[in-house]
Length: 473
Image (cartoon, rainbow, N blue to C red):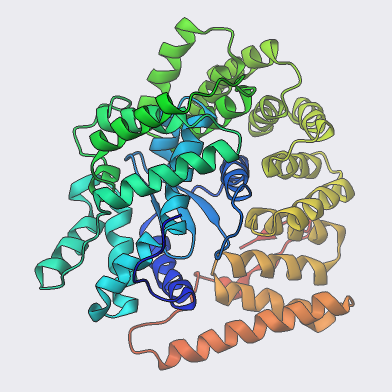
């Protein structure tokens, strides 16, 4: 790697990352889907692990946005849009994009740009860069408008990487890809997709092209690099990537476009189970449950023990009230070792509907321990304990749910009820900690002239349990 030119310190870059992430998280909707995120992080971590040393801890995110974009924040936070991920055809292409963004971080390109514009103020600058890089919706986006407006006000900031930065990131990225066991050809092919913008057919310029210039030069460089460094490899089993891509298309891209795409692809590839899986997800999202059930059944005919097909069909049976059928499928998915939290969630809900309260509580307990941010599970875990008559635990888990939902007044009600009679010392201490956090927020909001921080749902103080132990308002 070439020596880093003038750049801010590592500690300063990490501080800026906090402001950057705050702005990004306010402006975008993240795909918080463990199946998708685990896969993207697996590919990213594979590349990072090939590096001799790293000064940052890398994190990978997916933004729910059809516009083609990918970018790196200060201190190693890498983002890729769901639309770009859906446009990819194999893991090599995903690896190519991630390696390029990782290389920008390694070369300290972001911190160099920050250092050149330090007169603006680091916190303001972090938010400005985040707004422009997010650019959700292309050149007409609010993020881009904010960036242009700030620059028009007299701030000189070179937000786009230079041609030299891009070529250097490609050079280092290709080396990282080879060390990680990839051919590197995926970077060239995905750059071609971004240039042609042929997937969804939008007329907007991809945001990626605004912040990553000289794509033609980059493609020429990468193509020449591949010619000089030929590598023949047996491609990895593509099904995992195909299933992730199908899930992204089926759940997180434009609904009508996804349905049309799956229908066209299934005409040419009717035996591909991942296509039936994604088509079933898209149909379910469109409210066409009978057709969605049929699509998932067709997928299972082609791959009988796929836990995600089993989970998807089990979920639809649950939603249609076919609890015995749902139980069989969801238990099958869990038995195979499905890592999808929706499997345990709908298994727990099925147990509840069948009156198997102990099994329901066990399923939800397992889920919240594995995925502590899966807030819906806390709600139904609270309901499970309420139906068992264990009101302290019922209030405790409902308090956890509403705390994650930022419905702090409701959370406070339940947590105080829990703290009065909880026997478990760890849970009692946790309830007390959350109560103090909420009361601190409340005091802060009362001093804040800009308005309250605490959300107050109507009749929150009247939340009770009815005779069956179910929640009621």
